[in-house]
Image 1 (cartoon, rainbow, N blue to C red):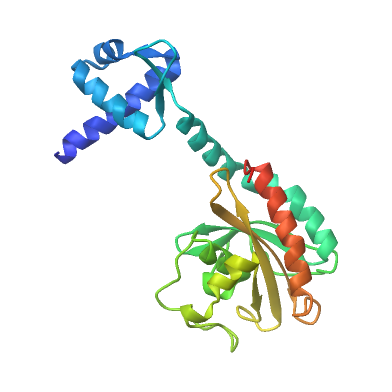
Image 2: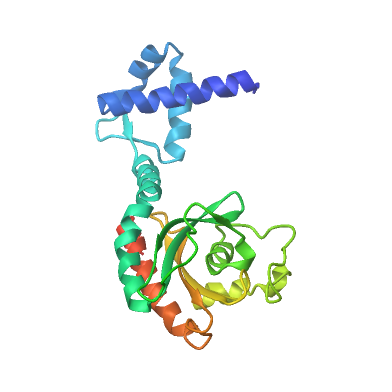
Length: 246
């Protein structure tokens, strides 16, 4: 199949979805007429869309309507768009409870990018990470995204501090996945510790991470397991707010 033919098939498949969204349900012959194609072509396109769950046959034999797959895709897209707004109330509570800065990060082009940040009552001042790209291997959020497959380890792991892990084998991703949270102990900045937990979308995949970060003298290594458990509970709440019901 040539590229032009493939593009034409995609265009026609999209047109079918738009027609079904407009009309509710339609027969193969009616779709073929509106698309100005042979009935066999319309049926082939419908079969492909049906396999993907995007269309289904209605109770009226021979008629097709939009399938649940469209709802699933729409829900996933909406969840990503709403993540910042839906996570903020939870982050506000977590920042108050933990006493440190709480952030939500999403995967973007190999890095973790913070989209929400709330400073805790103990954080007199600090860096604004919103919109900033941070290296996945040197941050707790990045490690969560790596462990759950939302990001891939970079080819080269740059060193930022003496504690930065520079070998992918030493990141402990399987342990993070089993434990349910990740830490970064002075790995991005000397004197800065962090812990993070995964946020899941409606399709059960990990779409983001919520983290708490603070100075190492206050957010000590001894506190990290306790804070990790608190973040897991908060991450589960955010996940439910954006459509995850696991």
